[in-house]
Image (cartoon, rainbow, N blue to C red; front, side, top):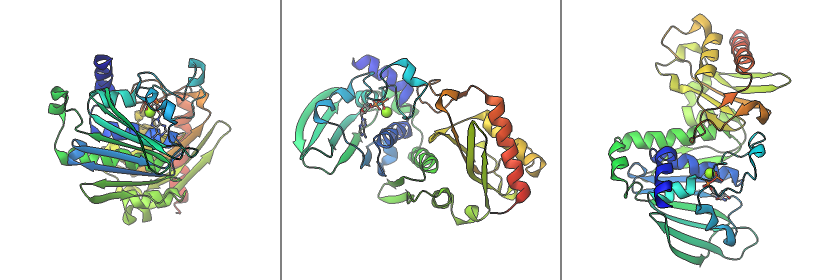
Length: 323
Ligand code: ADP
Ligand code: MG
């Protein structure tokens, strides 16, 4: 019901960028190769995510807006083998409960697509529509019926920055996919999706940092680490430019951050943090992503091993010192 969905929305959609994160996760899970994000006024008047993924079959479109209706998990056991980014079935109903959502979608086999419109969680329109294969979700007037939440929204620039950040992290985690972000008519990010981490890193961080980046790569029987780490003289004052992804999912991890710092050792002074973008691949049974509704925290079953490996990889990379 609407109230339950509004409560869930409080956890899932704390700001416009959180809605963007959920929508691009859905696009990625649908096998999209190109994902386009449009935001106006910090995402408060308009947020749109368009993908060229599988689309949703006409008979499933309404189901997608039901709480805990996910096509990605059939039982709890599946969670330990999770390959998809979503699994909670909360994002669409949560977003729809606090905005006006229009979704149009077409699967490859269908001649026509379907468009549905929800306002404050209620279906107000369902019509056939001509559209390309894939899905476009348009979110208008986010938080319009939750004024308390609207009050927490910071400046539009801050919200815009969060939107770009959330897409950039996803793009870095998936250099095989192309992401475009347009903010108030301006192109804020465009990654090519050519599969190269270096190309994604250059698009996101700019040429100067990319030129100062070193390739990191280390594999063990259980883990594969790969990514780019930037020379210590480019270290910053904030931890937030240490980026990590696990199995294609951007995550936040103090433990991994500390492991990177240990690898840089005395090369970066206390209170400085290197710019890094590191992807870890591992058997999904070795991580738990069901820690928080936002799914940006994970639990590693062997955290010490992962951290030791990461510290070693950073040390080796800095010693070799070649790009
Ligand atoms: P979850 O991602 O956890 O399954 P969501 O509420 O985000 O839950 O989405 C509900 C369902 O709607 C998904 O399981 C999926 O089947 C479908 N869906 C949502 N967005 C898309 C999309 N962009 N392309 C294809 N299917 C989608
Ligand atoms: Mg989802």
